[in-house]
Length: 302
Image 1: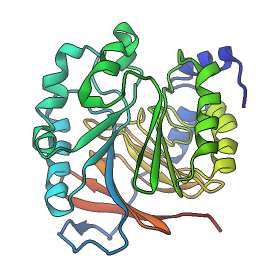
Image 2 (image 1 turned 180 degrees about the vertical axis):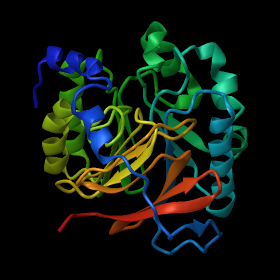
Image 3 (image 1 turned 120 degrees about the horizontal axis):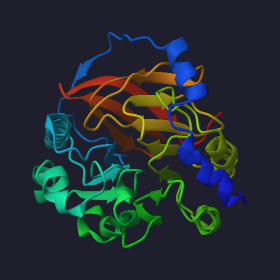
Image 4 (image 1 turned 90 degrees about the vertical axis):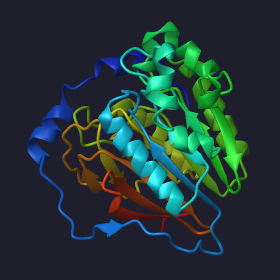
């Protein structure tokens, strides 16, 4: 699993050009679904291993972020959880740690008071100040001072990545493969800021597809979570991995569909996950506290 560093450095220049923007122009349309379900408290199933949520591109301190945060708190009251995957762009516009109260501590105060832990990774806006170092050291992000790290909850192991163009890929990729290979967790969840597959403004990341898709298949990674694209999108299983974008944490941008898209929506939202021995049930939840997408991720693809 080697990739030349200059190939990764070129990723930051992909931006909104090429196939991503062309794909959006050709395929953009609104998803429609009658399967909107109000959130309601339900008895936890006996075999529930873990419940967690994910959100990204949050750190504006504006009303969109607060609306999503309120929905996350409402869901917590009905379905308690103590883990949030925070998939980058935690502080807009330039990762200034002095904004932490406005863009993190105040919006999520109800959850933080209930001992909900946020596990963050760095987005492209986060590295604009001191290459993100202040965020690595901030206790509320639980990054342990590391740009990439792993932790385990019950039968689920999480792997946080630095997917920025200036990341130390020479060290990070061997680390990821080593950690995946030694993990005996039946569930493996990787998260980073940038997408592998996406139908939004930026589109697919060809280099990430080349590197991550076979790596995830080899070691049985069932789920990759990211942001960067400001929409919600869940893929069908691609070589055993579901790719899920939860970038509507504070604002939205247009999204289309691709042949591998299971569902996509330009909605302020977060995603909630219930992990069982043989499946993960995922729900997309909007600021109206209603479920607008539901899917199941099997522990092994057929």
